[in-house]
Length: 391
Image 1 (cartoon, rainbow, N blue to C red):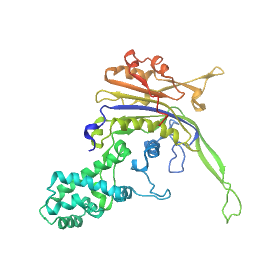
Image 2: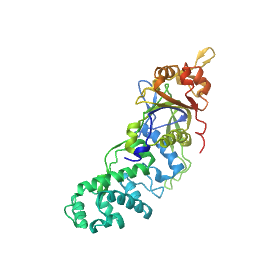
Image 3: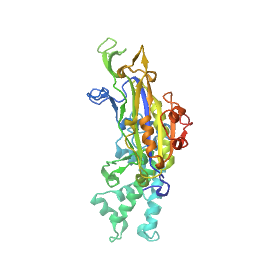
Image 4: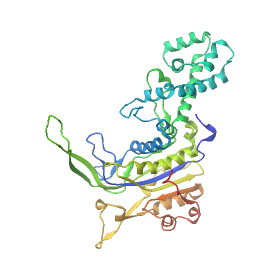
């Protein structure tokens, strides 16, 4: 759909670990309590929450107009719909209107004879209203377009389809998160014909804690009361878990990348945003620290798909007894065993081009290469990411 000759060359599979302390990493909308499985006592974090950290970093680094999914308008208190977001982007400023004129002009120039009078407006003076009419799926707008074109025999369906395809490609080129994650693009009104699913090349699993967690409900008080109360403070509850080490995995599919234009540079941005976005989204309820990232690049259409299950935590011993997993409170209470992970990687050594590695206090590079059974061939394919903490 976009940058078809510059899309992601190979498939990637990413394993990412991060931890939180006395935090509510992703509260459930019903009561805002941590999402804890009642059978396993493990805590979940949705892929939507993980993507928000990524989007926040990209917006901070490259500007808000580099991401599509944001509820904010120009005013931080303003909430906009997806339809409003795209409409404002496509038609909201003179700069954007000029870009869309160029897109429409490029498309029509290859399809129609721009020297003929009925088609000149496409290349010379398409207004925002005219462009909206072109992409509209309403019958009355199509009839209006025929009148504008004068020539009633023009195949409006074909014309509209080509321009809609170009505009969807343009949106993928404009928004990093659309290139990465896709969207259902549930659009309304005059943008309806632009809508429809775009499958994202990067798919992220729901994150889960690698051990049982302990939920803690703490009472809090406010300092300031209302004028009617004439008293300061009310008592409330806040929900958190005492500690959790979380893991997720992501697949970047080179075949889907052809349709959104996801490039190798976009995937590098994704890795940095995954790490930095997690670190930078630091609040009282999101006390997050990135701990480990391993990215495997394959040389054929293959991925394991279950890397999280290949991680084992081994408790340290204190007073002659192993620390119970519900008593974990920091990375000092356990060690990370990637033996199963390395066994998996060794079994597909020939399919692996490279392995990128970065850790923050959880596992040293030499430990990963030499103490988990990684083959000599794969050791030579491991490189450490050294600039992920920096712009």
